[in-house]
Length: 334
Ligand SMILES: [Ca+2]
Image (cartoon, rainbow, N blue to C red; front, side, top):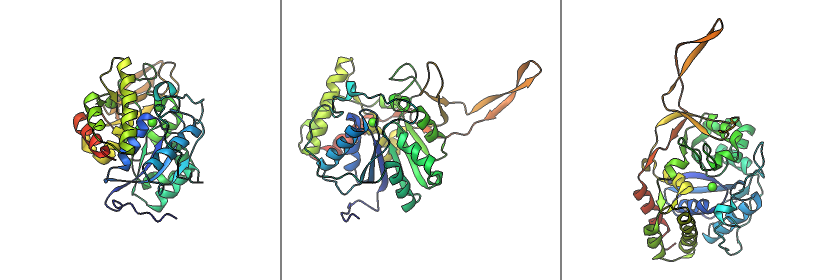
């Protein structure tokens, strides 16, 4: 096994980062690797922004750039559970990393299947592992389906995905959930502590020219790579009239570092898997109750209300400047 020791290990939160890199995945990963609060124990790769093979290659190159070949990097699912993959080179560049060509990786892929690696690590460190999936939830769902006994042993799940105020794929769905709604429903209903860092709260964290300039003042391999990614995303955002790029995946890592960055009320969230217009929508019950409709003769009669249990904390607001300053401070000079 590995002998390299992360100096922050022990005091820090053990995480498994599940990712489809991906430009904002790159920013999220580098934030995680450079934050002493987090101890990245494994990286599992899922197709989403790019196909599985490209996503794995990107993960290997980024971890190599960060000089962290001690971290196991495992391939996972090759496609969503029940539908065709939808890739997003349109947003992330042809290679998924803003068309930045990183040096070949010195790191080797771990031979284990991503979901199996998750299962193994959770059992090896019960109640200590936080899962941070920032792509489609296929790998996490496969792990839960194969071994449901991991659910009470996972410390916490912090996902980037979903929205309670409309989507980016279409009017209703956010891309990570839309890419594998059945997997998402499994993950939301599993019964573990789950925080949803969705599209709508991510949209409040715009990495604007001000932060880009700050990151451009310092240099280092990771600093310069992330500057290039952020510059690409900022230019893309400008074409769509936005004043900066939303930090979707990085904010999920930010919440793992410091949960107080977001306001996240508890709600019950279901994932729509069948709607004509709403497949992939995260449907959140804000009132904590549903009407109890009872069949009386030829009609239903409302006879009361039933409480629904919350299954997620849903990010609704964020201290954006504090988060963006944190992001820049962690990557400067790296
Ligand atoms: Ca992602």
